[in-house]
Image 1: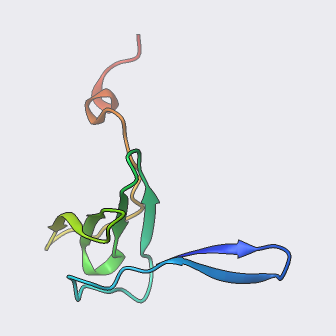
Image 2 (image 1 turned 180 degrees about the vertical axis):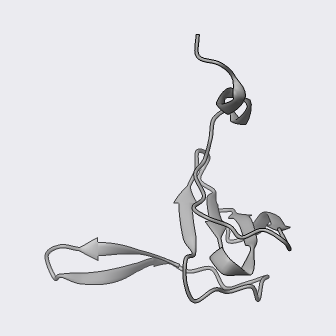
Amino acid sequence: MEYMIDERSKTLKSKWIFVEGTNDWTVERGMTSSIEGGNTISSYGPVRVTLEITPEMEIAWRIILRDKLLGNNVPLDDLYALNREPN
């Protein structure tokens, strides 16, 4: 789920919620990030699941890392650039 802050009324408003196709919910450390093209990457923290959700609320892909904890999900343009030496 994602919320937006309504500054005028000082309340949270639900922007969208995704509830279909998974039972891997977490009660803490989950995170979503909008990515180019309109999809959303969502990680479920301690339950070790990350998925990509389309604007139509369908799962584009889902990955479970059984022996690794997940941290923040940060979209990267080029994963390999992290291993290159600076020019």
